[in-house]
Length: 130
Image (cartoon, rainbow, N blue to C red; front, top):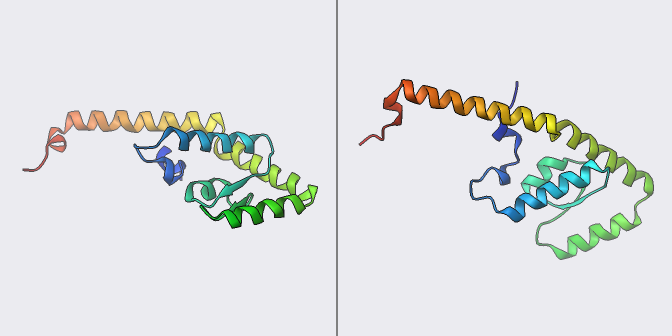
């Protein structure tokens, strides 16, 4: 079944109060993934939902875990780095490409238009019970 556009966006980014820095970090992550780069991300739900098992993760606000993961990355072999980068590229190409985004935006506009038309046809849906 086809997901609605809001279902495709990680939960942290669905909020109407989304801060610009959060969105910029998310876009930066997608960009790194698109260049076949291995990634180290904090384990917030939005990051984990995007990268799945294809990236290194550290516990949010845990500098010791961040240090340990950075050391692990530095010790890892080139094969793993290349493979992780390939997996991340596949995720971003499949789930977050412009074609997918445009399709999602189109669906969102169609849903909004349908809702607006229905609200005009059925005015009692627009009233607040009192």
